[in-house]
Amino acid sequence: MKSERRMLENMAVLGGGTLVAQFANFAFVIMIARAFGPELLGHYSLSMAISALAVVFVSFGTVPMLTRDIGRDSAQGGAVLRALFPTQLALSAVALTFLVAIGQISGWSSAEVGILTAIATYQILVRLGQIMLTESQGRQRMRIVALVRAGIPLLLLILAAPLLWLQDDRLLTMSAMPISAFVFFLIAGRAAVRLGGPIKLHWNWKSLVEALQRARPFFLIQMLSSGYQRFGIIILGVLATRAVVGEFAAGERIIAAMGVLVNVLAVSALPALSHLAVTDTARLMQFASRLVRLAWLIGLPAATGLFLFSDDIKNIFLEVARADALDRIYVALDFFDASINRVGAYVIGTRATRKALLFGLLDPSAQLQQLEAEGKGAQKLALMEDMKTLPFSAVWDMLCLRSDVPAGASWIGEMEDYETDVQRKRI
Image (tube, rainbow, N blue to C red; front, side, top):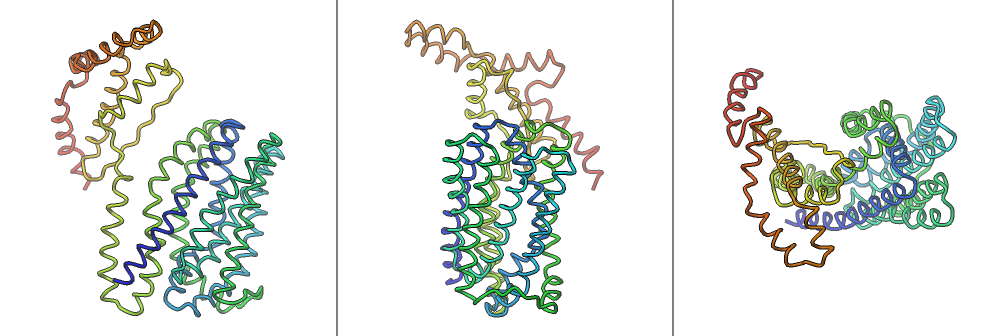
């Protein structure tokens, strides 16, 4: 019970810090996008993606391993941290040099290479800080972890805003990133020294090799995870313009924020699970099963992205139609609901979106605007109320018939036939 209460307290502290960090990061991205346009946002996102892949080789998957080891035995885990850190510091210099070389070989301008260097330095310092913070995470002292998580993007925002206001310079604004990361790297290092003693820059080759061998599974998982998250932007950066990358990254950032709570749960629970693995294996299994259920409940709303013909979706397309912005937007759909037929999810979501679009097009926007301009509020409200009971479904069915697609729910039979004849034979 004590472990569960401690985990919930840690989750609340980390959740608060992560929420602040997400808000500050989002505000920073909006700030640079509004100031410099989608091109810089695209270059920023591409540089972040490339750097994120490179820093995997700096940590080598040791952050979760060290958190686990320190949670089990703080003295032994701290010794492993100190054996690894000099090598990780050297790998940081190699990674930074490699990333700068990539920018130059790719033919980027000096300003673009400078921005890549600033972002890569930021990513490396953040990762080194995370390694230092394993001392605090493993000992379940999450306040310092939450402080660093929230503090880096907050300080970045505080530094970048006046730089942007004083001088409209891209590279100068981006220089706030490594400065903020360095400040909190020092704070994380100070916390590690206070908890586990000084960190000396000398190599213990035997401990280093043993630690890297144990870290291999974590490294592979981290590499697969980073590749899955980042390769899309990198490939898009090769094939498309920076502006397209920026637009894609803006949407991806919003969607990625949905999975934050599951990550917070994992970070909060790992030290407690590691301690129980040594002290009480029976409670470990009971505790882990509860965590799986909790993670499922937290992650399910984020994982289910099926669009329905709801008031929210209708209102979105009503606003688009009333703003006469149909030629200025892109509609991209992504459906995932593992609890139902995938083809069914795709059809339901697509038809719901097209219904919402038709609903917006049928809105008498011009007439409503004219009534509002003439000050005829009662007439405008009456027309809007009358719209709610008009036979929208008849218009939708006629559109389907004219387009030679199933009207109403008649497509369900075709879906079931496809499931029987094609999908089930793939198993």
